[in-house]
Image 1 (cartoon, rainbow, N blue to C red):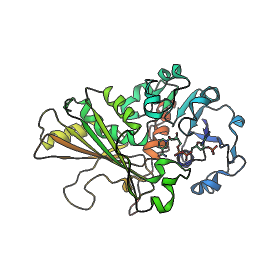
Image 2: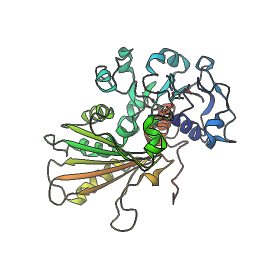
Image 3: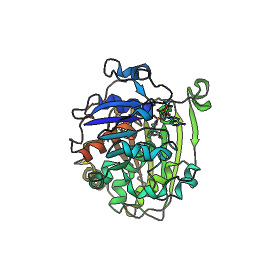
Image 4: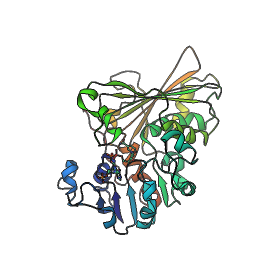
Length: 347
Ligand SMILES: NC(=O)c1ccc[n+]([C@@H]2O[C@H](COP(=O)([O-])OP(=O)(O)OC[C@H]3O[C@@H](n4cnc5c(N)ncnc54)[C@H](OP(=O)(O)O)[C@@H]3O)[C@@H](O)[C@H]2O)c1
């Protein structure tokens, strides 16, 4: 199948190209970038040296294909959606522009009115672990945000099983690397500011709160969700530490059972919980470059608090890998096609 990548000069675009270069059934025929039109893709994505001989083209030069992956910056995808939809029968959008079902969430969380709210119901969330059946028959997929993806995957098994006390808040504390902010330099990404960072990026009010709430409320009854995001010294990776209060006290083996049930048939979810050794808990470094989401937990012996941790690579399971997994489901490929890379260690 032929794929075009729109907005391919960014980090998510680069990861789409890296992963699709190893896909057995999808060939990328064109990649767009307004800034870099005419330049070889390997000039900005050095990981593609000798893996791709494509050059960036303008968006107006994109020709119809079987699938379009759109990795434009958020807020830039919605105004161009008519052209994007005309490019291919399957549109996979990595931006935030079609993730939220309620148009009033956009001014509230993103600060802009949605230009085409009538299109929101036509998009299906692209997180396979929650929406596999809908994805299989949807032509418009909205890929989840990176922080939201890690938070939702950590909490979904317990919300789905009806084990969360809705009278208590769920606290989601996320540590993020610098690539989550995209490739465009900003004052906060400037090396003297970013190096060695342990920087409270969004103690409250992070945009992905809306998405976590939306996805969890579709699974069960949840109360308030309190999300905080802290930037740390890393390029890739998200580590979420989610605190929830169980509606009833549970033994450790019962918690294991919930997670085993949630992950047993999932190709990219793994439970990581070892009693001894260096690698007892999920660690974003150990999933770098892969589509895995590692889940772990710890039960507070003194209360009904359960701490669930999740580690992902923000650019893979949090963006390009999630997009390819969803496209695989829709297009009838093996769900793991192009995503079979394991991690590397040590890193
Ligand atoms: N980074 C992550 O961890 C992550 C995770 C999940 C989802 N996402 C989402 O995926 C998308 C791409 O993320 P990214 O990290 O790759 O971002 P990025 O590095 O900033 O790249 C954004 C792309 O958008 C285009 N762009 C930038 N400004 C534009 C404008 N004013 N008008 C039109 N196009 C513009 C750029 O194309 P030109 O070359 O033409 O300028 C570039 O190809 C974003 O919507 C982001 O929210 C990112």
